[in-house]
Picture 1: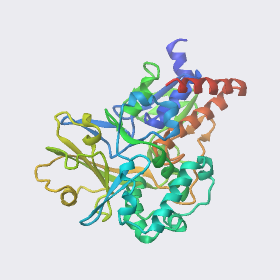
Picture 2 (picture 1 turned 60 degrees about the vertical axis):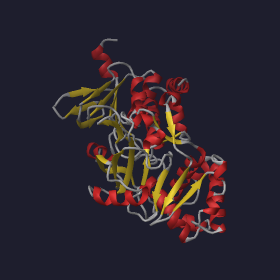
Picture 3 (picture 1 turned 30 degrees about the vertical axis):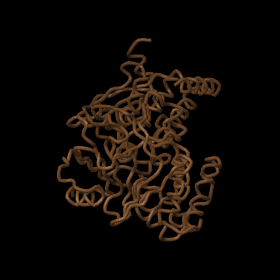
Length: 429
């Protein structure tokens, strides 16, 4: 096939984040030519890693969860070289600190929950019941369960306001990027299942390793960076510089706000904001790869990333990641709270600040766990705003969009064979 014809017959994917790359990979594995157009200078979207002064800085505090089933479908987990965090938390109050660990992962800390003082025996029994149920039942049952706000759900399970305020609210603030716990209870249970069943960590080379692994499995020349799309049609796109690119179909995998500009007919959810501060310390102030959550709400969470992944630092200094809900540049206030948590920080260097205004889609009830990926004939959309706001949701939406494209462009028998072929290709990694 000559290059011009191959370009015309390719499906164009607008956006080189995890959703777009997963969509392109499924199409490629099925035998469909693809072309990915990414507006920025590299793939990744919101999942990028910068190297600044010898430090690997993810664009916002992000983690990988080995329990995400879709990640296991499309990623070589061994190639990620995951650096795990401890399966638990340190809960920092105004002065005191409590430890809560998953007992089946850390049996030496089996009594950490009962001895933490964060809740009553009834609270701990309720937490154990939620965890056991969410780990045991199929995810499909959690998706189909009754829906309400997460705070109402926790109370319905028997947790006291003290338990919610001291443990659940500060922990979930860093996950859902909101403290009111207004997120759908279905989303909470799916996330809670993943945390209980999986291992949390970061790739040794940063979270940007995830989209890079996906992109590297596409054919040479399939990804074009620096290509900003301004218009979308069923038979191609137009770039901001006026260049027209034809294709058999178009999948918009841009961030939610950009997708809404290109596709006015889709609903764009409100977005949650977060700011991540990075500091370099002469040595680790904690010496343990564990997340510290802030019960006071001054910050959301903080972790010494190099205690888990020494590769995040080139010179042996410790890299501390601290996240605050919303967009802020008030490093002084953050530093004051870090001093209360870790001790003296006068020798710390402020490396960078990442204010991310659109980090995660809001997911209040009623929340559709699956939004349509077909927009109009020849035009499709994917991204975490079509599923759950997570890497899992982004990857699932990419597969759903790819399957929709194949189902529309090919006869049913050929599409079914392509699904099977693509599945075998994904299973090989």
